Image (cartoon, rainbow over all chains, first blue to last red; front, side, top):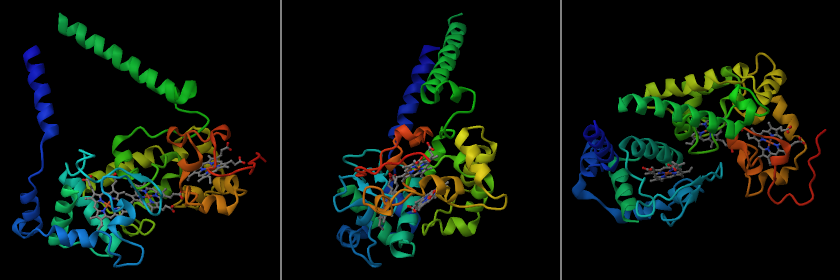
Length: 125
Length: 187
């Protein structure tokens, strides 16, 4: 009985600490992991293609700091995985927010290349 | 033998905990499904999906016809200028079910009932702050106190109602930021 409990507990832990295979994710979007360009994402981050709208408007320029939704003023926890280990741990969540945030910021969805660059940029910051 | 005790024990602890945590939040009333405020949100999926951009508005702040309208594809693609359509249709259904099952007309909490009473039968506002009851309650707040950076808009319930997440909007828990001497007397 105890043994099974222990095993079940261990399995649970494994499931939680599982990390995403990012290269596979990028390929699933149609991007080539060898063509990552973090500089491009860095430049895009606070570029206002539409006035007063950029990734930085809600997430700020320092990804280790908390952000604030420009409209609702709701606090957004830091995106940096270094200070917020919960970030970039769920594929569904990443896909959902990239779609929403690109539409909000640029009025269009981001390309596979752009999405890959953003994620690698976030992982570095 | 031990297993049996374990099961009974955990059932006991479990039920005690749920009693305790509910009593803690809503007092005596909450346990019986009614109270002075609105029913608090206790749904992790809702908190995650509808509480990441803003305060997770309680379902009991609007009638189910409003929530159904909000979940039409037209409204989901333009939810106050945000596209919040769901790729996961099962999730979408789950959220709408939660909202409609706990909507204002099904609630016996005081504020939900007052909201329903104030609402014309054919009105389905998308903003909780647009119901006649809340319009009246908020009618006397000076505009500059609402648009100030610390609040932003009347939709930012938490900025002024410190216990909003508990579904409690009582007057003694209201603090408008930087309000100075503005006095919000009850009428």
